[in-house]
Amino acid sequence: MDLPFTIEQFLGIFEKYNLAVWPMQIVLILIAVLTLILSLKKISYSDKTISIILSFFWLWIGIVYHLAYFTAINKAAYLFGVLFIIQGLIFLFAGGIKSKLSFKFQSSSYGVIGSLFILYALIIYPILGYFFGHVYPKNPTFGLPCPTTIFTFGLLLWTVKIVPKYVLVIPLIWSIIGFGAALSLGEKWGQAIVIKY
Image (cartoon, rainbow, N blue to C red; front, side):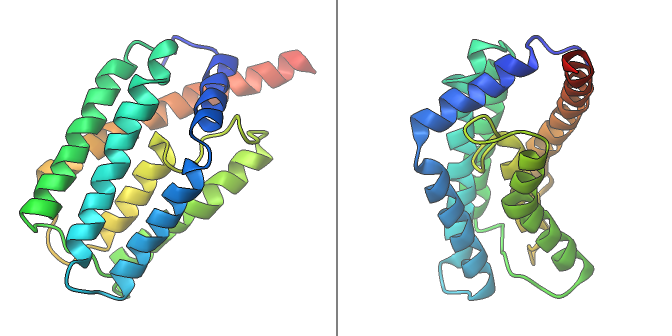
């Protein structure tokens, strides 16, 4: 996949975003932790609250990251922004209005895999980023597309009802796009290191 931007431009967008929204990154992580608490210690409105939080995450990424920042280096970000906004509205509709989503950790294989996704998104992802040289503010913090999509899949693996297929379409599409971009950026990153040294 040939990307329309350089690694420096991509990391520069993270830097602009991170500096502009600080300390929202901490707020987003705290809200993510709240979803975990609500999944473990259920109260009457846990499922709706978690769905609304997922809706907020996806709307935030669509509007604040894709449309306000990423479009500066990639015009496809207009489409990405629209997709993330649609997904935010899907979470609001499916879980917040229709109550089609119910989240609760269970000690099944799905629950364990979901936990690993969540652990990866919140803890391992930023640690790996640091060791690959992506230091704040030039790093993808939680609340940006890839770590938040991984976190979303983790929570969806914790659901106790069958997740409607329409809820999964856009996160799956983004996973494919993100994986392809990560491979391409990884290749460019490797070439940049070879050229530098």
